[in-house]
Amino acid sequence: MIKLRNVSFSYGENEVLKNVSFETGDGKSLVIMGPSGSGKSTILRLLLGLESPHEGEVLINGDNICTMSEAQKRETRKKMGMVFQDGALFDSLTVGENVGYYLIEHTKMKFDLIGEKVEEMLGFVGLGGDNVIDKLPEQLSGGMQRRVAIARALLSTDPKLMLFDEPTTGLDPFATRNVLNLIRKVNSEKGIATIVVTHQIADAIEIADKYVILHEGQVAFDGGLDELRDCSDERLKNFLEPFRESFRLVLGKNFVDC
Image 1 (cartoon, helix red, strand yellow):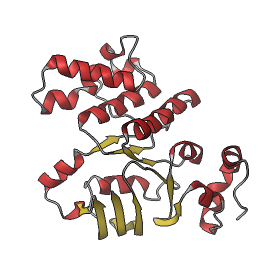
Image 2 (cartoon, rainbow, N blue to C red; image 1 turned 60 degrees about the vertical axis):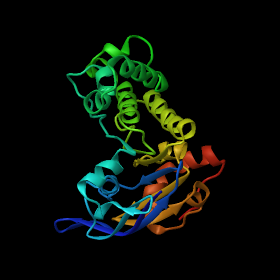
Image 3 (cartoon, rainbow, N blue to C red; image 1 turned 45 degrees about the horizontal axis):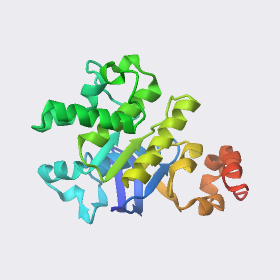
């Protein structure tokens, strides 16, 4: 479904991605990890067609989004949902208006039906009660705002792929758990492929089928959890070391000493 092939990208003189290649399939959960500045969020912008690589291809279902017209890119984006780091909700709109925004602005669907779909989606993300639908974002906790953002992304189009940029940043452990459970639910119950950008390995272990780890703009690892545990790449030593205990708890054993 998604394939990056020999992608390189720079911001001016700053080379962010260097010959990056990886792929993921329909209904799979991919986590992209790496230190700050390693190019993780840039990959999401490339997938959305907001940036174009200086070299290489970004393939969506076999089609190179980099060579599409703007109209074709818009159609391709309709198959994707995007959840930003801070949720990016409209402060002046209620939760219900935020979640139903795309349907209100871009379709001729009747308001009663939009309301039903909004309520259904809020129920899916665990926010069906306490009159959440009529509240403003500022009246919600950070974790609830993040779940509203997920509901909006799911209802905005009919996504086959959901992109998450640092979805648990700034959240307490309880809210983090709720968001991770919801990402798993999106993947397992709706069959939607997910790509999650994070630097939190403990979070990644909870949700990923596959891991891509970037180091200085290059792919230092591409594989599953068992392979990650056995990783002996010197480039990942400092990045993986703080999460030794997470590997032990999940797998019953530590990853190999680098």
